[in-house]
Image 1 (cartoon, rainbow, N blue to C red):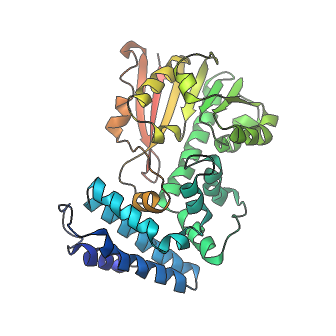
Image 2 (cartoon, helix red, strand yellow; image 1 turned 45 degrees about the horizontal axis):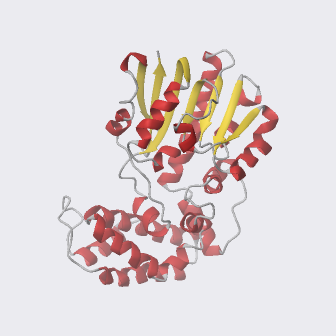
Length: 338
């Protein structure tokens, strides 16, 4: 899969070599990228195989990433509008994954159904119905680095839960913004009922209905609660040996993230662990996610993750760890309470 086409697209638009190190934002207008978008649209329309569709999508992903990296935020937002007005959008929106993120039927991108599109590759679930082109794009987007990171995130937490079941005596576990809580499906300890309590907390009643259907028979409880109410400490929902959140922090700005971290930490039992996941900056998929999925996240560096502990009293911090999943797209902050 050659990178030459994306180099050509970028050099035509910007007039600078891709080997240049972080040049100043270029001065061209959004209208100048329309012929390039038309080129991508033509390539997709004329693609006759999954391989050719994937090659075009790879070039599109790389070009959008590079373009976003080389312009300021205001100019990038202008380009995003140009991308969405162009006919290419109708083609890539034949992909159910891209389409759902963009249209947000539950009010936000990254909902539990979208996550199931990603997990379906591991579970061998049938892909959603779409056109032949949409199916090829779906196969590409759900195997892209960000999606691979989401699957690795699920596996990481599943392993952590099995480990917790060995370390603690029937531990109590809380999943915050649980979605469908698919990581519990990978956890042997759930099926063996080695948890004293396992609570899936989410604001979306439809997500919790699926948790009850798939995991209720194994003793997993559901709790519908908004994060704002949890943060305000208006409801006592117990204490836990393990509290974790997979995707929530990707949407939380400071100081909300710090405040919630402190609140969740206060709900830990002595020796308990809080595990938080967040996307790292500069993921390859970022340009496409923002332009065609309208999926904007709050990215955090390793330093940013450590900063989320600043409102926790220092004497209560027994251990603070950082781990990146195998794709280096998602970082985990793990805090142990003294």
